[in-house]
Length: 227
Image (cartoon, rainbow, N blue to C red):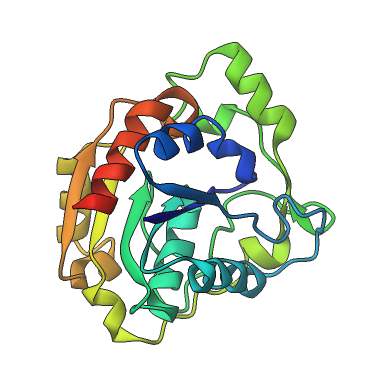
């Protein structure tokens, strides 16, 4: 199965470099998606541009595919399910949850000169970054791509209730499956509260398992594709 890989804020397709060969070895076709404004050399992209790029990758897949979103990009994976519910076989959400219709995508940090730069590691100290050594932190920070304001502040637009029929697997890195279920039950994640098929998988890592647990993450994604 084609497995579309969408990295979160500040990351380009190279974030999946250690996951791709593992998925290939497990018999799947991994496709890291280059997001406009996050790896294509532009800084004026909008959230709509990123959604269009993901939907184009879904349309180009060889058949129904697994769409993987990491962190903020969980919303992009869910937007793909909304746009192409008949083409997205399953959505895998790593370390995040989809925003609802009308919510801003990810306006979490200060925008400077039209972009939201990587804020450094201080905001992520604790469970998020606990398993990142100094070398990995430096490499991620050096490769970080400032996110265009039109992406960070763009509004999520959802329209097709058939998205709730798309199976979802929530991969839980810095939080536990029990915590994720509690948040959904409490009404903090309305989109997943309405999804008909949601499963939870625990991975012992911080927020960026593609860097610290790539083989384990690949095995989980392969299992999601085959399940």
